[in-house]
Image (cartoon, rainbow, N blue to C red; front, side, top):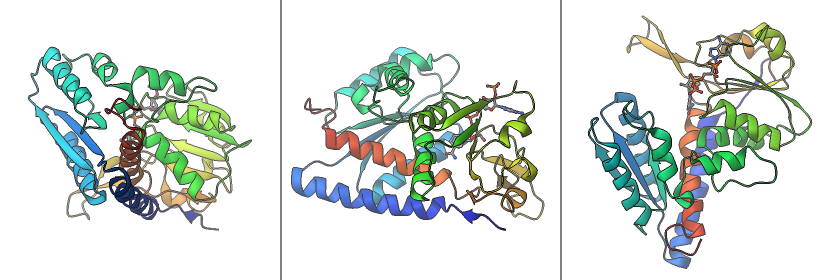
Length: 296
Ligand code: NDP
């Protein structure tokens, strides 16, 4: 048996189309155009690529993007000043400070300075706190975890009452995705580097979310037959046959796992495209709620 592929690229394209339509409607009916500000500190190649992709995705759906590029040695005070300006700018509905920030910057203080109603990355401590509590709705949910749940929902995979196993407990992926699965009434296990007998834990999973950053660590014989496998990992491995000299693989050994799983995401083309689609969705929601206009 071969698993059904969860095509994140196609699902994200559908969502971007929905967002484009909603942006047009918002503009036509209320005269509002969503705006996303990106703040990039320093010249990390990966961060530059992510920011460029986010700006391009904005353009495609009619969201205006405002780019702010600051030197790597920018002071904390100056960076906070930029965030404050963006908080006050009524054309900006979402603010994204690209992580990671240089070591001399207190990233928690920067994330906490972003206006709650413009926190489209969902990393403001209050939004994360609300996500961790029962019956407290965060204004925004972090994009990659939100994308994982969207992939499950749009593939018709039931979450409630099922065993969900999350590999990884980072603030960016593992922890928030675990909270979302719990709120959706999954029975949850969170594994990490100290977990004893990881294969045995993974074999319990009706839904597996892998976010560890270890190339193809999860083997096919760890997977429960019929499970839904969401592979968040993006790892570059050497490949002499690839013109770039490397290829990208997930945290799951795809070829093996696809023989056992019921549904599986590929890498690339699974979770990755969803992250940006969810950022666009959060920005649209921020604008529709009236972020920055004093009427949200
Ligand atoms: P982190 O390095 O912050 O967290 C990794 C987590 O995996 C930690 O909780 C760590 O445990 C756990 N871990 C590491 N090694 C093992 C192991 N051998 N066994 C069990 N658990 C282990 O990574 P991120 O959460 O930021 O990212 C995870 C992956 O997802 C990366 O490949 C990253 O590139 C990818 N990613 C993809 C995105 C996308 O849009 N597709 C977006 C964000 C990330 P401990 O806590 O004990 O250290």
